[in-house]
Length: 67
Image (tube, rainbow, N blue to C red):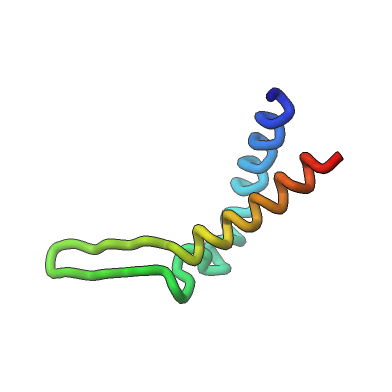
């Protein structure tokens, strides 16, 4: 269990280091992300961004847990 938390911490550190690069890649506003603008409200659901992040994290965790 401690190995999992160390890996999770390293992932968060790497995300923090590469955050400016991720903002330049426009990662939060990809085609396919749902944005609904009303008169007084805005609903934003980053479905494509969530799928890409999920795939990347799955690959990273698979790599570290592979024996």
